[in-house]
Length: 413
Image (tube, rainbow, N blue to C red; front, top):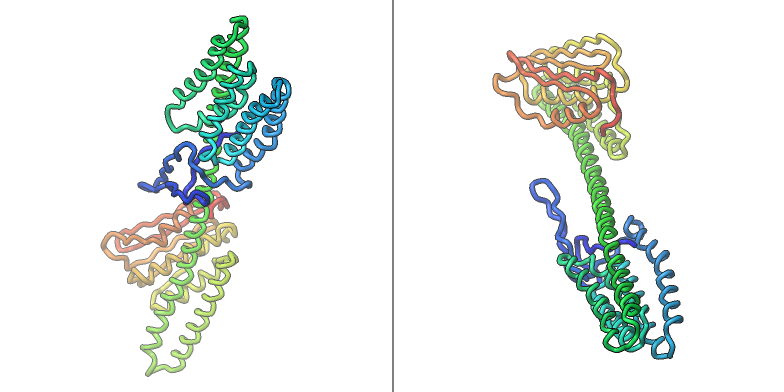
């Protein structure tokens, strides 16, 4: 049978009681404290693993428990009032089982325990029915493992009560002592002990199922976060690059506004075209359609460097592997933006190989290189695809190199 742990953040929809959500401490999630026994909680949706297992419990075990209970009543009841008493115990056991499967035993736990305990006492001491412990067997074995503490003592108490009531039969009857002990003490107490013991590992099993479901949920949340980071990085590449280019061209247009109107008009047309292209790329990014073209990025970088008065030299030693071209284009774009923003370069050399790119510029400042978050994010993406990203600053030169010695793995975002 499936276990039924009370847990889950939020507010109970029926009782209105608040439950402690998981809390994040030091970057790690700490699980909320388990709810107290009997706390009412909202049943899991049927689509979850535990929801399906609980539904399976009802389909498989509820009919079986019902049939067994009715058979016991039919065989042992000799009068109508005995049938009523035994039937009440069976009904209490079935009600508790249904609420236990739904994780909502708060209102029925004590009444069902009281009813089934009374039925066992009446059955053993008054009616002489040794199967009257059926109800307390079901209710007790399901209720005890759900206690937050003292479960062992509770289990011993349950077994002791069943055995004590059975032994009390000796005080009201002159039947054979051995027969009474076997029928009213050994068998009921033994079956109760076995059933209760079996429910402890069962409860632990469904606790593990709960942990696995939580792990899957956290993994799904992390996947969403990674996708958002990737989207933000790509959006930064597009918008940041465009804004820096627009800034350069507007600055150039301001210088030439009184001396070269035709050049100013050309620069403004290029700004307009660049903004239009950026809008298009942003839309493509939103629909996951954006793909960088390395040749186009290379031509764009040359034009930007020349517009900024930077000499640029390109060496193409081999045709670039198309599988790594998109990532190399991202490296080139990010490096171009960083050179225009952070360096006072006079010369840039770009070297392309079959599986990598190297960009070297002068004009680097004689201080430790600034933390470039764009390159840091790009490094993670390059490494995740089986590549290496190298960033070095030495003797006034800044080197950025990306290489994929074994091709792109295709496993990263």
